[in-house]
Length: 516
Image 1 (cartoon, rainbow, N blue to C red):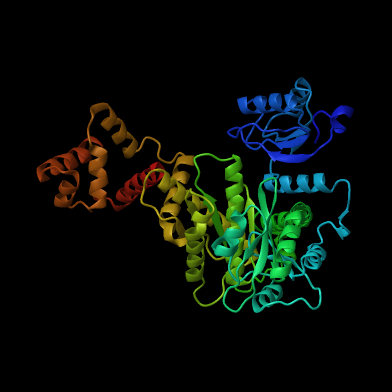
Image 2: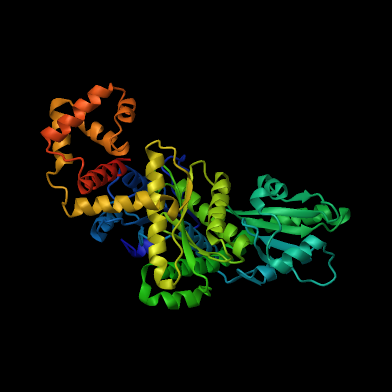
């Protein structure tokens, strides 16, 4: 929505799109659309951004309301005489960047140099014709987005395999040749490996964002310099085509996320979503959940990192299962894991361990990965998701309190403490404790500086073994006998009653889990 659609605002020229980070040095924003990532109405960063954008002739600022009323946003836009666009709160910032850039760059034309915008196969043919070498266009995940089909141009076995599978044999993140190309300022020569052929390669970027790379079979020493120069000149045009192609694929990713959300949240329509995704549910599915543990969220870097995590999860699932059904919902990446073979949980555990092991390549912050129980039917997927999220939050909570907790886990690994926490919440929500013995002992310890609750906890933990209790509490056996006697007398506790002991143990255990 446009908060202040005046003729002047609507007619403002647009040259580019910029993701705003308040910590970055302020650069030229003349005629640019600025995406206000992490800025909310009323915050100092929000007001500063609008002031600076208006004074620097920015074309517009895109914000998310996050609870602010449209009247407030419109008032801010009018006050700064600035065009303010309001995106939905659940809109994906990186998709907004891609779509905005594609719209800006392609607003005046639907083709470039005779090639329809976004047709990467036609563009690969054009590049192959200009450079005299077979061309392939690769995205940062190693997927082949387009390749040339001109007859007569020599190719090697690697080129043959990648065009058949539409995937590089080694992920770019782990390939030294890709890393060298990404680090180079322009087109470079990549020497031949083993029996293969040398290649010319160029990293393609838009506004500093890596879109992918172009790879050309080396046309030979005589034509190499001309081909490298031509490849360099193609960079802006290649970025334009790749942005247009990606805007279409981004729509597919968003649709995929919506269908997965339907599977986990909307049981009446889950069968339709499963059919649209082409899911094989014969052996059941399990929901995996992944999150990056950062001290703050909503920053530009956190947005980038969570999308890198999504791509990592998708890649690993594609390699393992031949297909990957994953989506970013909120700040959590979800994946649907098939339950193939006789030991699916072993496979699930290995996959999340593998993803966690690779996570250092996308973020310096820890990644937590969990899997809910197996859902035998589509209708059970919400339960599997709930179990995955409960386990995820439990591990994050343990790590946040300095506990020696793992970074990956299946739901059954922590099923007992998670169920006990549910019991504790049930006790609290239904006010079942009231003024029971635990409450009275806590009040007495607080008022008299005594340790009766610790004594009771040790009594239940060691089944009344006096010596073990004394060793645990670092006091004499007689002291323990005295305290146990006082507990029974002062608080009317019959510790021989099994039901009483069970209730006291449940109360103490659930309290301890809630405080961890």
